[in-house]
Length: 342
Ligand code: ZN
Image 1: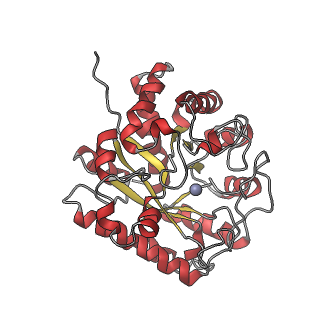
Image 2: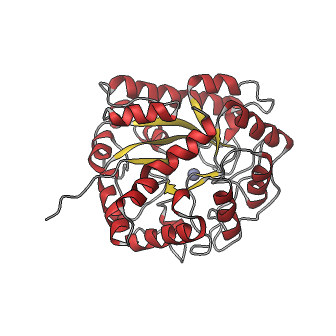
């Protein structure tokens, strides 16, 4: 029997911080360190499966506890975001040197070489950012290195795609003037801009105003699964032209042809999306963006411990070691380095 190689994976998107705060409020820090039923990321499982780091999303849950489509107030979003930053810091502090929050590609490489997990702070839906951007520098100083200007709702900066199937991602107007200013400021400061929840007009506005690689951290192929959250062929091509990256989303509703939330999905369906993206963009522009702890993945990879099943499926589909390393790690490093600077 050949020994399975564990490929280090840097992942474009997860919601573990939200999950810990919402579902393990009594002890969110400790809950990160051991496996629980239904929790996709914990340190033990991550180490087992080669999940070495990623963009850790700070998503703001409904202020009224019910309505995800309602935009939260800036104060609520700011406080909730600071709680999540504090949580990740507390996790790092309690990890006995096994988790280190990273702010640069060099940080990530150093952490991974030393066997540590390398999380990076990402805002999903920029409600915490003041429309005049006066607190953006402060968040940067806290370690923020990536922003999705909008989640699937509207805010001061842009309009997100509502979740619809089957439907086009062209669901409404693009960036606001404040949104355009946010893109320019992120370019200048070296903050990545995540397009995953943007509608199509917003996507093209970012493509026009940003001089950095286009990044869709957790989206799939619209031609294979016609949800508003996936990318059209023209969008994929423009990601390639910008030297950007698309992270494969494991959410079954964005993988399955029928768009259903049924986790009985063979890994061959993931491979179909990867193959399509590689055909359209080349091997250098495809990464992973699991959406772990934010959306249901296929049963075969429903915890980070099972990630080697995905890399094995890639190998069986004909991807060699170099290609798998690009998809799992190096493509993200290039896109982030081009965005953040040295
Ligand atoms: Zn998301």
